[in-house]
Amino acid sequence: MKNLQEYTQIEELLSDETFRSWVREKEHSEIWEAWSLDNISRQNLVEEARNILLAMKVPSNSITNNEIGQELEQTWNKIESIELLKANQRVIWKNTWFKASAAVFLICLGILFYYRYSIFEPPTSIGYSELIHRDGDGMIEQTNNTDKSQLIMLSDGSSVLLLPKSKLSYPKVFSADGRKVYLSGEGFFEISKDPSNPFYVYSNELVTKVYGTSFRIKAYSNQSNVSVLVHTGKVKVSSSNYLKTKVKEEMVLLPNEGVVYVRNKMVFEKITYVPKDKLQSIEYTPQNIEEFNFEFYDVQVGEIFDTIEKGYQIKIDYPKDKLKDCYLTTSLSDEPLPEKLKILCESLGANTKYEMVGNTVKIISSGCE
Image (cartoon, rainbow, N blue to C red; front, side):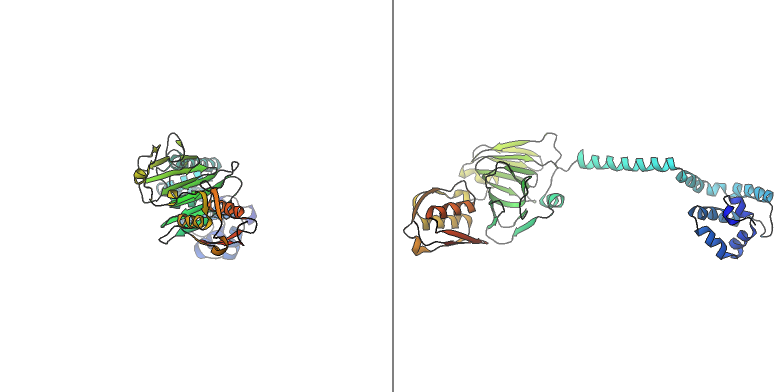
């Protein structure tokens, strides 16, 4: 018997009596199992030699190399029809070039699939859940399960009145590369002015971009349209990059202008003027904050606070006795709620400030100066 370390061919294994005894009678197991486990290429060699030996009708006693060759040829002829597919598979997959080609093919197929369904055939509609799944990491989600609007204060001083059965996702603190929020349902937005950092509202298929203004968006996932109505300032509305659109459409809206995005047709319908008797045509909810007048001329402070309470559906606690003789003239129409409160407090004097917890505002003052 040759040194086992020198065996590299099937014929060498088949001519070894101890190998044949191991395969057929399970003798010398420790020797051959240790040898085969020492190298993965040996495992393949042993497996092929073992299969051939079991298929050969050769006695387990001594056998010459010539006899082995003859028997191998006869055995291969007998099992060729059965083993042809397996043999081809083994040869093919042992070929490094073929493996590389197959890998490249699979990668190309994956890229083609991605571009086919993610780029060339993007979705025709998109909802809040999918938007949050794509971009909503680290967001705070506020859900209004009540029957009244809820006020949400954002880190930049902007405010959102979130209507019942609506959700808003927003970061705890906005980043410098754009203020972004995600809406499902309906909300009235008052955005603090920051020309260097635009504010984006993602609502189903629409993206609304502003720098500082007030507007209303209605975008329920189960409704056929998405609508935007501008109250003050200027708004840009466009279709989402995720949608299947040949040309990215963008519209600029001014005060009292609106747009309806028809979801099943993927078209915009702009409304250049929105009188009150046509508010319902853009799915606008009547009796909302846009109907309140925040222009005050020589008005008692208590009345101003009452107007803000009703418009924002919040509670304002203020010292009535100390402020009963205070009157103000001011314009608060194009300001978010925090800015409105700040202007009022500054107008009353340095001894006046406010604190806000949830939907309750507390005015602390010793009277107007």
